[in-house]
Image (tube, rainbow, N blue to C red; front, side, top):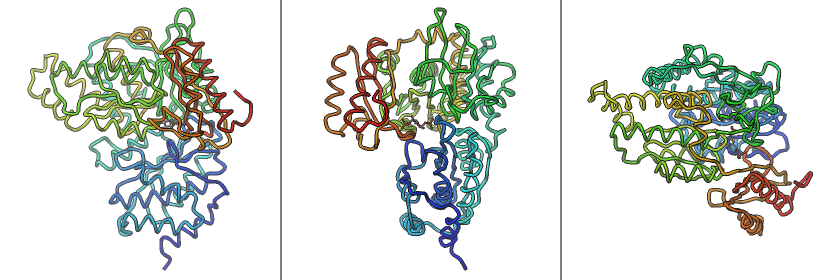
Length: 540
Ligand code: G16
């Protein structure tokens, strides 16, 4: 009889590998969709081995290229508690994607992890709205079936919804029901609980940029369960525009302007999702028609400030405390506000949810947000236990009991597996509603240092090497000295460069005391990258 490995090799002929080197980047494999068929098939194979290695727990696979243009696609694996794939398995993913002989690599993984072929494997799959995703799910299922695993295809879901399904299934329903309806029920119930505990009235009107992606579809379904507590005007819902084209959270953050496809008046409360709805940002125009962005740093400080206030009211003491995790992109003023005004410790990691998430687990309540709007909050069981004890032991009419109930409802509302645009938006809405804040009130809490991000195309982005949570360059030689020299010419300035793990470019970030200074520093650093690291195309 044919062995599973022989079968995998046989079916692999239907998914030939192109002459390309693949690498598991910031959020899995990501590139032009035309090159990805073999990678999809092979990730189906790997998901089966991962599931077997985790005693038959469900492993998730998401077919998405998130913020990238529609002609790209990508794939990433999701571990049993809905978190990103364990970093030590990323090397297996890259080796398998690049292998000429897949049997050798598969055998190596089986031996290294002492995988028992008798353990049944289960894989949950979902995709975003990219047309190429349909065939890719078939390729993935071919991989899953070739190694004898069972696959469940959820069709189109937001990325965080698939993360949620995986966790629900592996915790036997403790986290929620592993269905789309279960997802909407869980977060809408928690949101309505928070609304009822706050007592304030009013129905905020939100103008939402859905990036012409999956978030626009799914938020419509969520809205039906919110019982009129929010009014959502959904723009860029995919009915005409292209995915992520001049819209979506990445575009808004990068260009610091409103997306196309929205009719905005001064003071309107505007929200933008990215293409797979795992990032969210707020923005508005003031009465002088000046654009204001409320980014991931701003959301993190809002959530942490709220939780700190509630913790103080409950009197609960946490051994590992409350903290924020940021990346090098965090605005310098958000870090100072968190540390000095809120009195909360701030940790910094490399870019990527996989890094910030693990760091946040070091706190009892770890709130992580990347400036680009990707983030969530993590709570240990100890927090839940202590809050429940306060509710049980305290007169329900007291502020102390109410605060504990609010924390528990917030925990129900947050998607603890990964950043989730829909759930995060409801978290922000809950806090703003309770405080009675407009976006202007929220923006007034601290002032961002003007900042600018740019992209530079170079021949091989891997020539750029970094250290110190990506804040310093170690190669090419001399580049960091040049950046330091440039930065010293500006006030309150900071700049760094790093290769993107999702696009074939180098990212440049600069902040300084004025808009002009931040723009000019970002340009000057981009030119140095172009000159010293092998720039291609037009010089910035
Ligand atoms: C992904 C990751 C994020 C990361 C972003 C950009 O987001 O999940 O953690 O910040 O890529 O990464 P890079 O700068 O390496 O290109 P998304 O929303 O695109 O999946």
